[in-house]
Image 1 (cartoon, rainbow, N blue to C red):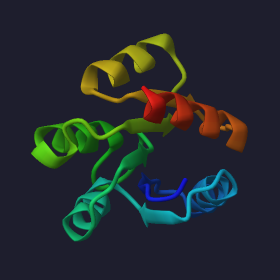
Image 2 (image 1 turned 120 degrees about the horizontal axis):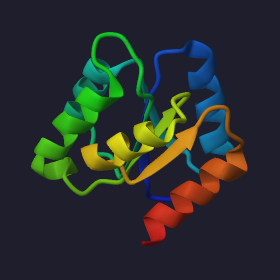
Image 3 (image 1 turned 90 degrees about the vertical axis):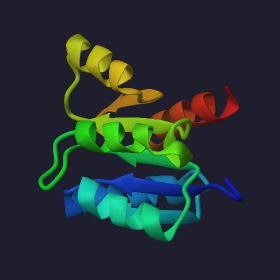
Length: 124
């Protein structure tokens, strides 16, 4: 997806590789990785992003804290955010939506699931 810069935040090196490869496979070539929320906040000082994918459970700063900080930042108040997590309970999805995420994907997922969710969010 040309012209879209993606930030994804994931503490697991294996999952980072999987997510990066999935994003490349579905057409994203401007992809930046962060290991946790604090790392992500450093990255947004350097670059502007059009889409953010974040894990929920991470050290340093978790996904919930990161989303809260991003939604308070005027630049990222409306930026699409997708939560990628192992937390699949209905209450977790409700909490994520209330905190301001635009989409929710439970791990493990396929590149096709990721592509569909991103397409649904970027089109609307």
